[in-house]
Image (cartoon, rainbow, N blue to C red; front, side, top):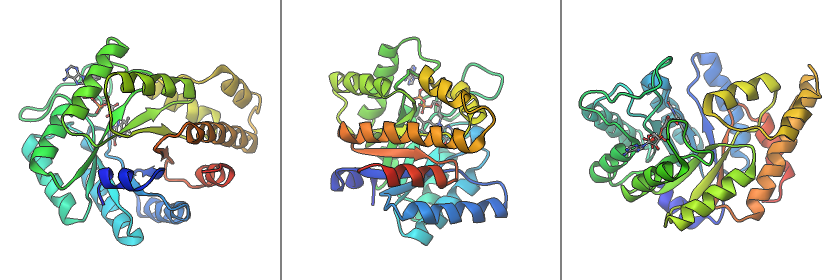
Length: 288
Ligand SMILES: Cc1cc2nc3c(=O)[nH]c(=O)nc-3n(C[C@H](O)[C@H](O)[C@H](O)COP(=O)(O)OP(=O)(O)OC[C@H]3O[C@@H](n4cnc5c(N)ncnc54)[C@H](O)[C@@H]3O)c2cc1C
């Protein structure tokens, strides 16, 4: 099933994002946690594509195995980094052969230490170009793109970023999955802006339930997510107590989830980092 059919068929579509582990032990753990997550009947699962295109084969292997093992729709993330258009087409042919019917189409980040993304010769400079190619050459695939409630780090303004998001939707994206955020007001403002700009595809909030202070600080500094002061203060008040930090993280994600569900979002995409405990707690506590 492709993303447009998934969102048309479900008033609320749950999805989980996993990443390709480096070892067999990591893969075993991933599938154990995925088994727990699948009990919550997600509409689809996704597997990320390593920075610099480093995990291409393992991304596809994991996505294909998730598809086989759980029989759920899956999506492979895919970036433009370090690949020509022909190499990307080859990857997509292999994805289709493996029954991976959906793509989260991204530009990717500049290499470490560089602030500017440089397109590979014969490749794509922006995600909208990748989306256009997929929709023209692989019309059987569903396509989601990334959206940024707190504005993409390289964008000169929210308006320019929104124009660029619109370009991806106009190129044929079926859904937008947002970057993680911790203040729902940022998402609601972004949703209003998208609506005013005439974006009609499902806008899916992306949430990462945090489980400890150092993890959240690292992730937030990487993607620029703002941490509400109260949340950060609550986390820091736990001192080094890992269990209490976990509880604070779960409470934050549960409150965020409940408010988003009550506000009628078409789905939520959880960045679970190959773990199930926090997401299981959140999804057990909320009224979906
Ligand atoms: C849901 C989600 C999943 C992700 N998964 C992965 C992953 O698996 N692997 C990975 O490496 N990264 C992943 N990322 C991170 C992503 O690669 C980075 O955020 C990257 O910096 C931007 O990718 P994009 O597709 O949003 O880029 P684009 O939409 O191309 O935008 C990049 C920047 O260029 C600007 N821009 C866009 N189009 C144009 C244009 N035509 N002209 C001028 N400016 C333009 C935008 O405003 C933005 O500032 C993910 C992000 C999200 C939100």
